[in-house]
Image (cartoon, rainbow, N blue to C red; front, top):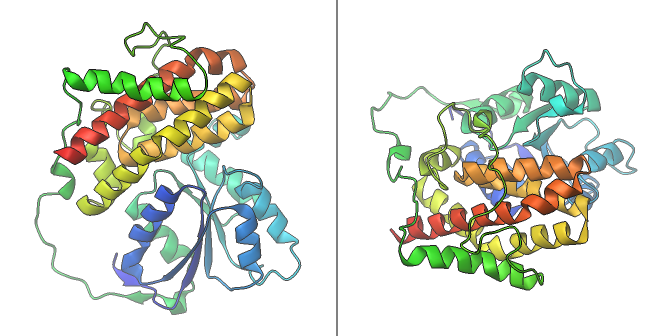
Length: 331
């Protein structure tokens, strides 16, 4: 970034640790003070205790979600941040919410959140250039210090390193994939319904949503490390840490997704798959992100039959991506 904002205070609210880690990394060059919260109620408490120059607020979270918490903040007694700009963080395409169909996804989403009272929005996965533009537009001008221009250095992009798909080999790793998927089914009392017993699913893979990654190129296997590095600002060390955290959440997230489908809890399924969609695309698991998006939309629309018929396929793809991460980290 070509500026610093050492005197600025920013509050970031997201229920997913991986998203907060990315924001912390992207904001670190600004030298701004970053305060984090993991839920809407925690944010409301902080708004009454501290003053901020900007609030970055995730939309889809357990109740109260970001939009509900934002609305509550408008009438919150003791709120010290009534004039503070709020920015919505979302992987949603608000064209599905009744916006003008002639608008692009970004224009429609921006119009939706501005209509709710937000100053702007940041699409997930968050890109460094989007953060820079947003901060320059919304932070107080007196707290921004422009840096002296530096000579442009010619160097190969960091994302070029390790840009293979990270696909596991077909020998012993195949059994490991089936083992991961089987563990989740066992935790929820499910058999291998919806699969052929080899880890493949009867579901139909969704078409790739290339727009979510900012490129029209098709995903490169279960883990596209080049794209993942892009969302990490080319920082190899950070990317590896994000991958580890993302993979470590597999059992807990997979259990929630499987159980919510079995129980018919569409709201829990919607929240879980929305988070999986965003975090998967952030680390470069683009195919899984597309599967998760389809499941999220089905849960939102009340389509329980789709959720139940495709949950095995979703989790099978999840297992493939986790194994690809393991192979990449071991390489």
